[in-house]
Amino acid sequence: EAGVAQSPRYKIIEKRQSVAFWCNPISGHATLYWYQQILGQGPKLLIQFQNNGVVDDSQLPKDRFSAERLKGVDSTLKIQPAKLEDSAVYLCASSFPYEKLFFGSGTQLSVL
Amino acid sequence: KNEVEQSPQNLTAQEGEFITINCSYSVGISALHWLQQHPGGGIVSLFMLSSGKKKHGRLIATINIQEKHSSLHITASHPRDSAVYICAVSQNYGGSQGNLIFGKGTKLSVKP
Image (cartoon, rainbow over all chains, first blue to last red; front, side, top):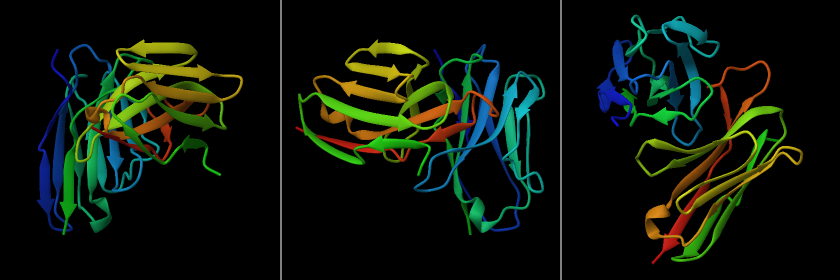
C-alpha cells in the first residue's frame, strides 16, 4: 500500500517569497490534515479537510497561508509571503474518518 | 500544567528489556494516539485508542478512561525501537479529530 506522498522534501527560500507544498494522501482516505511542526515542539494542526470541504482551519494564519483540496484527493498548502518564523516541517496526514492517521515524510522549510 | 503529560522524558534500556511509557491527560477525549518519531524522520502512528487494549507485534497500548491514563509497552526491546514516542489526544468537544493535544514525548534509547 502506498503511503502519504509529499513534495518537495526540502525547501529553502528567502523571507517574503512564496512557497507551495503538495500532498497526495492514501487512496480512499477522505480526511486530510496539514500540520506545522516547529523544531522542539509538537505538530500544530493548520487545516483539516473532509473530502474537499474544510472541517477545521482555526489555526491557519489566513493572511499568508492558504490550502486547497479541489477534487477531494491531493492537496496543496501555500505560504505567501513567507516569514522567518514559518521555518518548520510541514506534515501532511490522511485517514479514514475517525481512524488512525497516516503521516507523510514532511517538507522541511527554511526561511532565510 | 500540561493537558497531556508523559513519563519518563528520557529512557535508556538494554536490548531485550520490557519497556513502559506512560501518558496522563486532564481533558475529556474522543481518542488517544501513540506516535513514533525517529530523528530527522517522519511520524508513524502506532495506535489510536478509545478504550481497552490494542496489540501490534511487540507493541501493546492500553487506556483507562476512568483514570485518564494510557501506557505503551514494548516487549523484547531492540535498538531499532530507539525513537521519540509521543502521546496525543483529540478532545471530545470543541475540536476536530486532527486537532490533537501532544505530549512532550519520551526519548527512548535501546542499547545493544
